[in-house]
Image (tube, rainbow, N blue to C red; front, side, top):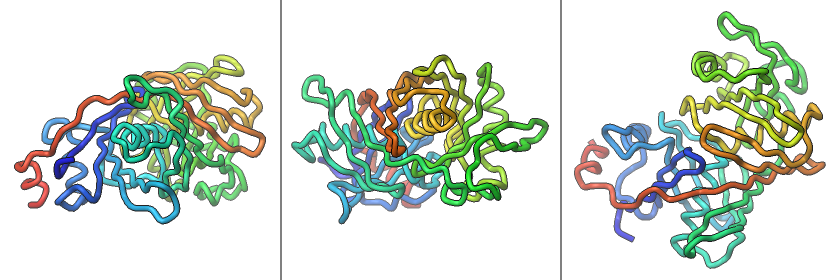
Length: 288
């Protein structure tokens, strides 16, 4: 590959740029991440996936939000990264492991099209409900059905970690304007020391849920893998869904499976958008 080669791929409308740390000649600073992700001055993206070395798994991955902050884990980001690994022949295996800051996960390329990965399943680890491990500042051991003041509203919230923190709120009706207004307030609430992702969820049946997503560090998002896992886990905890749940988002659908030990498997499609090389002029600006 050429130096500073990139691939841009989306998972249900949640788009990421993939870079290889060994194949870039600039430092991926907070400023550089913001510039590359900017739709006017860069390529435009919901984040950057950086391939790094790992001593614990087949591949290492660091995940950056468009504001330059680092995420522990991303479900869509993981599937996009795994497609990159398979499509560009960095492995011949359809099953391999990836180390993230939120833990090591196993990926499985389930379906291909023209020798490119299309449908990918990822073991997302365990759902963690312990309040301090999520983490939250709530006194209770678990945050299920707790009250949270968000400006002029009070929400009943449910919190879980999928390697990163989530706050799930059950709603009878989903309103985009509402999550855009209150998502940022909840994300930055003092009860969440590391901030939090936010989901509004509407239960359709024991096997189907609709959700809206406010992603920590990114804002309103069409789709999110860890958010889907979080919603399915919380609703399973409340015995409102079965162990296999279809999560419907504005960007598309994911199948989430949860076993009796709270191990989570996520399955969904990913599609490449574009590939190319970051220009010398962009690199020059990044190095200023």
